[in-house]
Image 1 (cartoon, rainbow, N blue to C red):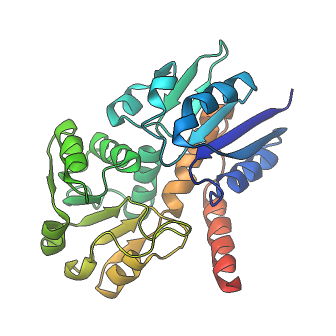
Image 2 (cartoon, rainbow, N blue to C red):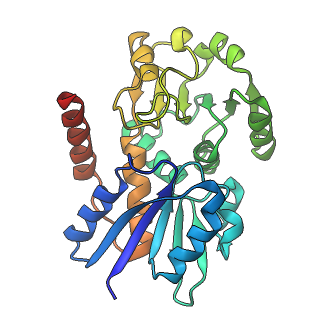
Length: 280
C-alpha cells in the first residue's frame, strides 16, 4: 500500500506543510503523499484513531491540538512530555503511536543558523503560552538559553507555564510593553497577525531596544504587523519560515530516516509567499 502522511489542525487549509513534504518525498524518491486533514477539537480522538486504522504512516499536529492529542497517544518522548505538547506523531512497527515535539528544536536550529551562540546570554520574552510557546521554551532551556519571561493575555496560562520551567517568570502584557527594552530576544508565538486568523499585534513593540532579535513564528504573511513595527523601531526581525522548515525536516527524518534539504526549501517557500502577496 502506498504510504501517506498528514497534518491535522483547525484550521488547516492555510498550511504549507503538504507542499513542503510532498516536495521532499518526490526529491527523495519516496512513493508517498501528504494530506491536510481538518480536525475539530471534539473529533480529535476519532480522527487520531481513524488515521491509525486507515494506515497513515505518521502525521503532524498543528493548532489547537498540540496538547490535547497527548491522551490519545501510546507514549511521548521525554522532551514532548516536558513540553506537554506534540507536533509530530510516529506510528511504530507494532502500531503504537509515539508523540514528539520538533517545534522547539526546529526553532533553536533556526535561531542558531542566524546568530550562532551570540544570543545565549540574552534575556528572553515569549509572547503566548500555548503549545508552540511550550515547545520553544523547553528547547531553549535545554540548549542553554535563558532566563525566560512569559507574557500572555490569559495570565493563568503564563503562570502555569512559568511554574513548570525553571529560571522563568511571567508578567502581564502591559508590563511587558513597558519593560520591552530589557529583552535581547522577543518571540511572538500566538496566532495574532496570521493570515486566515486575526489581525493586529499581541503587544505594542514601541519600547523595543535597537538590535533586539524580534522573531514571529508566523510565516504567512512573511512580515506581520508586529515584525514591521519592531523593525521600524530598530529590531533585527525574523519570521517563522526557518522554524517551520526545520521542524518539518526533523519530522520528515523521524518518518523516513532521511534528513531533507532545508536551505532550498526556505527559499522556495519565501518566494511562494512573496508571489502570493504580489497577486493580491
